[in-house]
Image 1 (cartoon, one colour):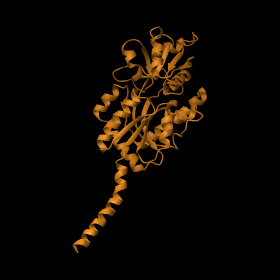
Image 2 (cartoon, rainbow, N blue to C red; image 1 turned 30 degrees about the vertical axis):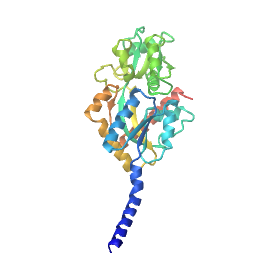
Image 3 (cartoon, rainbow, N blue to C red; image 1 turned 180 degrees about the vertical axis):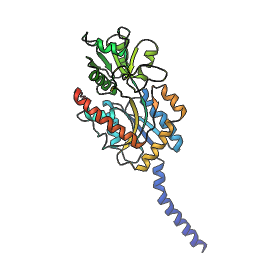
Image 4 (cartoon, rainbow, N blue to C red; image 1 turned 90 degrees about the vertical axis):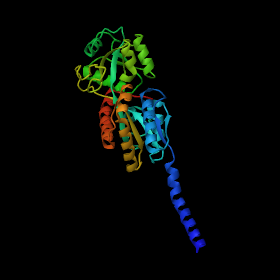
Length: 321
């Protein structure tokens, strides 16, 4: 009798292990956040900040993998084809809805291939001029573009980026004669503006803040709806062009088909992480403020942004290859 019971117990334990084993093994796999940019900068900082705290909350490893290139297309294409199990996530920015419109082969569809998780942060783009520029206000800069053939030239970190689109928005709204000068990254765009090689630069406030604080660049306006705390630069809207409002954002997306309950749990965890008081302080140093939006709110934002930018991109003829 005891032998029979022992065998029965052993058999039940084996069945239990067989049923629970795969799930346990699956749960032990690390989550990976794939970042569209190289190490360093606001996006990489956000990924590592969230990864560390998400790992602490879940008790499971969360890794960060930087896959820069092609304006974010390499990372986005990789995640679009990853298993839809919540273990591979994309940390991206405004490029997400822009790239499929300006690249002939972006390698992904912004909506069919992804499900939004949450918008982590947002921050302004600043238009700043070098020390040689006579402009003291955005109005003076705009007016000055009509007299000199190169006075309206402005540098950004690349074709089709959020800063480039802000330049096109301002040019369209104000009638300024502005010419985009694309650089490979914010650093060379900033240094050439300081050196007087180009009159103005449009970059994230985070990237320009050190140059502004040192007096090497003079900020004229930011693209956000309100002035940035601690750096009261006029907005483009209050400078006279109310429709030039466009923030840089950083957000998390998952492959399409990821179970809704998995997406919602990721949303709750990440929203709580970025809305903690210490996060606000850390993000402010990066020129960003926390958001932690709902899944529905983030999706609505992406769709509205895509519709708005489609018109601007077509009117401006922006293309990237």
